[in-house]
Amino acid sequence: MKKAFKYILLKHFLTVLGSFTILLFCFLTNKVNSTSIKNNEKNFPIERPLNLFNLEESADTIFNLVQKVGGKPVANIQKTRLKKNENLSSLLKRINFEPNHIIKIINSIKKLNKGPKILSSLPIGMIINYSNPSSLTGGALKLNYTKTRDIFVWQDVKNEYNSQVFLRPTRTEETLITGVINNNLYISALKSGIPENTLLEMISLLGFSIDFQREIRSGDSFEVLFTKKIDTLSNFIIETKPIKYVSMNLSGNKLNFFSYKDKFGLPQYYDENGKSSKRTIMKTPINGARLSSRYGNRKHPILGYTKMHRGLDFAAPSGTPVFAAGDGIIEKAGWYGSYGKYIKIRHTGTYKTAYAHLSGFHKNVRIGKRVLQGKIIGYVGTTGRSTGPHLHYEVIKNNIQVNPLKIKLPAGKNVSKENLVDYKNHIKSILNQKIALEKSNQNNVIAINNHNMSNKLIFN
Image (cartoon, rainbow, N blue to C red):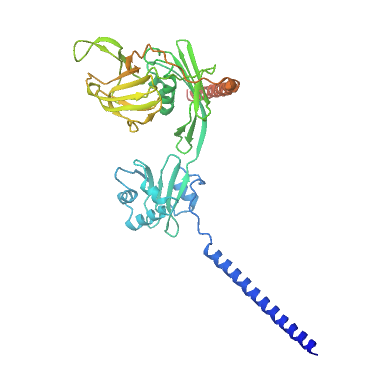
């Protein structure tokens, strides 16, 4: 009897314990689920800022952009530029936007990714197309913020301002330009359509092998193959990539150089046999100048007596760029007695170069800073003891000035033997591309001539 009673009590106890366990489990589960829901609510994703690396394409006009985003219609579109010492707020005030509209526009741009930074870094001279708001039309702005990005601000149908960054559409084109030199490489190349930065790259590349003052003749020709990036809205070139191939025909003597990446992935230039285009020092650190005074004894134009002239003088207009003749460290940059504004560069333990009578220095020139061959370091002037604008150029070997025209300088590194086969195949690829572009250019000329002939037949 006692055993049966104990068994019944134990059974009731286990039943109660089991019920309590189930209730406790349900309570804890509910608490866990409640906490999870609460945390989810707390961490619910908010609206993401605009991703500047995944942008929609821009349009050519404010009118088309308004249609694209569904904004309030615009009218009377005008254009202005950001002036010096002007920010967007003062510009908007100048073009007659009301204060409450200015605040809304500024706040809408601030909401963009890095919006405050954008507002503080708007470039001077930036083009701004705009439409003033009215009772019937909306306010809108199109800021050409960079070469590749537009910032568009518009008023929606609720009269609120919105901002967005748009990517300007571009295309790349492989380009082959050929030309004939009439009297000056720089002017002739620009007239042929070579962008200025590509031309400076070409001069820097050829400056190791060609004396621009003595070797170029009228009738010499050149070819340049490069890639350009074009803004399809404006049809302007916004970027050029390193030259792939360049050729100069000097009185029948043809020099060809091809781009080939080194082990660091940087383009270097070599001839058909893999020999480097580079020398330790360029023959001529300036383009478009006349050699006005050679190395040696001469009657000094100011002092009036015969004096050793330990460099070369190149006559050129004030402001003409002067290039670093080789890679090196800037030892001096400042006023240096009769030399006027002066730069000295240490290239190796053996060679240094000096540049005198400059009108000014490039903004990146500082004593102790490394400079790369062919980069602009200063500008022609007539400072110091000088009778007119010119560059006085010296080559210093073992701390003694030597004749720049007579020294033999070591070449750069050639293509290694193990890479020579790959280099030869690389050249074939470039030449095939050149041939294809030549055919394309010829077809374009034929098409233009046929079109002009058709017009003559129609209108005559």
